[in-house]
Amino acid sequence: MGDQKIFDYHEESQSEKLARKSKETPIFPVAIALCVGAVGFGAYKFNKRGNMSPSVFLMQLRVGAQGLAVGALTVGLAYSMINEYVLKKK
Image (spheres, rainbow, N blue to C red):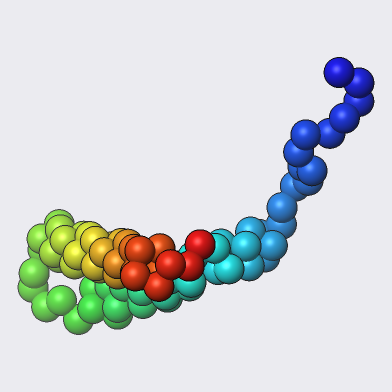
């Protein structure tokens, strides 16, 4: 077989990985922004929760974050399907 390289492997830095993921999936930066926004919102509202117990607050925040994740996945899947089947891009 010889010394042929099948893969051009190198360690990716975090910025290279983020740039590659952004090119492959344009919805990826939006999902990251939603995640950061949800964490920031949760941190802000945690101090303003009043006399609600922390466990109830965190459970409600978790449900909201899961809703955002499902919504982002749905939008990403719809985007991919439109590009592949309607616009015939690959």
